[in-house]
Image (cartoon, rainbow, N blue to C red):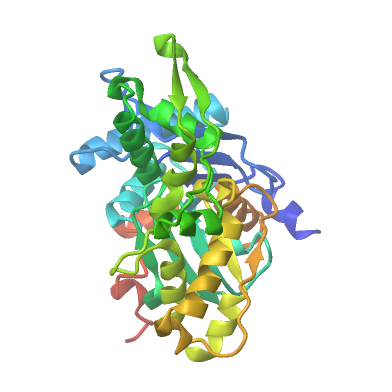
Length: 378
């Protein structure tokens, strides 16, 4: 009997990727999520809508997760979670309270049979059947860089910075308010829509010309009119705003914390013998990686640093060519797709935390916990 028939012939496992801004949900062995929904919850007690990860204590967080998963199971997926398996895609450095509370809700409240937590960076590579790459996740709250070699995440080389989608929203808001637009018009939804519809990453040459103050300055991109239906008004998005809001990812500073620097520093934290393989295997995931112009600009920035920065010239030798992998789906659900592939294999049987195992001590094994990783008899 084929493996997939033996594993998912009755109830395919549910696959969740709960991000800070959006949650991807669906079933194992499917090519794309059933739905992508905002990570917000309508509280059953007050009917208030709030972000899932805005909570004061674990009790409040528990209630919010219950309401959120209730909506996912019974409104969007239309399945009963009882005695069903689930795959949860998570950040390897995510908060312990998140996974502990989530596991308690899944086992205690929804009576699910097992849960499998998979790291987002590593499982994303399974979509391309790759063992080695530098995985760059450009999310809503942060940008994370994780080198992976031969299927092993190199934890000491992990890098992160806070210029994700939220920082881009703040930059759009700052520039538009400075141009005379009322701040009350710029809600979070409006800012995100402006970012997606009209903003882009400018070319390396235009960015360098503005940075050096060369004369004449590049001609700004055309301005566009953006209608805000809720207020029945139209605002003008200047061309300079459209092409400069993403410059926060490439800003030069003494901290050397721009996106190109993060990638190069993460590679330098790895052993010398794996660096060339990582340089030639860069994989961008996350919703922020879908912006127009990011890939060619990032490649040029990396090449420019290698040629002009003495720190990197002394540490990278020979001819270096940066190579980027193209995802088989969209970047914003690549991690979910990896989880869906994982849920269609025998890993869902062998590596999951079962309900009975959780009931013994009500604890989720964690790689950061020495007791969870201690060999028997030691």
